[in-house]
Amino acid sequence: MVKGILQAFGKPMIKTKIKERMDKLQSWMEADYHLQEPDVVLEHIASVSKFWSVLSEEDRDYIHGARYAIEEKMSWGK
Image (cartoon, rainbow, N blue to C red):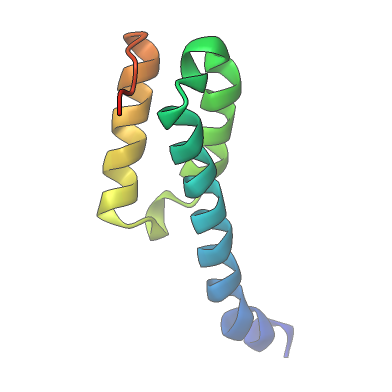
C-alpha cells in the first residue's frame, strides 16, 4: 500500500521540488550570486543533481552551464 501511495504522489512531489530548486538556481545565477558564494551554489546544484535521472534535458544543460560559469568565475549576464 505504501509503495502505491509513493508511486501515486511521489512523482508530482519530486517534479515540484525540482522546479523550486531550478527556479532558485536560475535566480541566483541571474543575480551572479555564484561569484560571491560559489560553494553555496554548488551545494544547491548538488541538491538538484540527485534527481538527474528525471531532470529534463533543458535542466541538465542549465546545470552544466551553471557549473561552467562557477568554474570559470564568469558572470551569468543578462
